[in-house]
Amino acid sequence: MVRENRLSHAWLFFGPEGSGVLPLSLALARYILCTNRGESDSCGVCPSCNKVNKYIHPDLHFTFPVNKTKDVDKDSPVVSDDFIADWRAFLLSQPYGRVTQWYDAIDLENKQGIINTDESKRLAGKLNLKPFESDYKVAIIWQPEKMNDQAANKLLKLLEEPPPNTIFILAGENPDQLLTTIRSRCAQVKIPRISDSALHGALIEKHHVGPGRATDVVRLVSGNYLRAMEVLSEEEEAGSNFSQFRYMMQLCYGKKIPEMVKFAEEMAGLTRERQKAFLEYGLRSIRENLALHFNTPDILYITSEEQEFVPKFARFITGENVESIIHELSSAITDIERNGNGRMIFLDMVLKLSGMIKK
Ligand SMILES: [Zn+2]
Image (tube, rainbow, N blue to C red; front, side, top):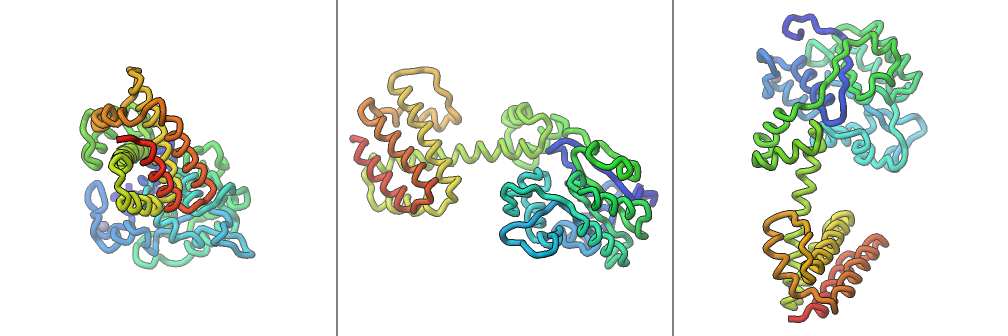
């Protein structure tokens, strides 16, 4: 339609989480604005594509749900432009991101984001200007369901009498929550979940996952690309917790004090969430070791590396020290939750663990 110059002026793309509604909207915007279009995609390298890739093209306008935060507060209602730097960072890190992740990215805490009347006024003002660089202006409205009624009615006016050379792309999940009058003004496209074979291919080509592993991930995520990325990063985290934990136990066993101090400093440099995740992993490991110590066979291993280490490690954990080891890890978690000094907490913990593990 772009090539034949019969592009509808308003689109409503909708589909389930992780199906790529927003990435597809961005791809269409990039194609419309590209100065060197190919048959089936934008060139990706022209100045226009470069600007779209950084989400800084002056003819590409974004509207998304926001609300007042600790950092962004003023007497008048806040609008998307107040958060544009956060928005760009969000898109660069994960354009498939869900709305709650966006709220976390701007520290909305327990508030909901909305698209308010000021937002629609601001958009109307921008779209009434001539395009800066391109033949078109493209307005992407992400999560249009979050418009309040006044904002929706203002947008409806814009859709009814669109400014010249303007393309609206509404990118949402639940079209039923939109005014019927808005829906009927848009060309509606339902984006299906990603097919298992396409997702399988993407995991192998873009994320260098082995074919067997890719099959396992695909089976878990029902065509949701975002979930697939989360499963991969959870696995990565589990792997790194394991090697850190093994390292820590080796230091404790070898009573290597200077290395312990360094270890505590490194751990203190992580976020509290990561520190806690590490200790919780440790607790789980100890319980599994305990099970192994008493020859319980039904243990779940994550990796083959772990399978090798755990039996050796099981020799240090005995009926005598297991209670105190579990106690040390648990109280470190409590201290971290109470905002204690990370360096002190970890150093104290490894020194005590070291005393509990007999050579
Ligand atoms: Zn281009």
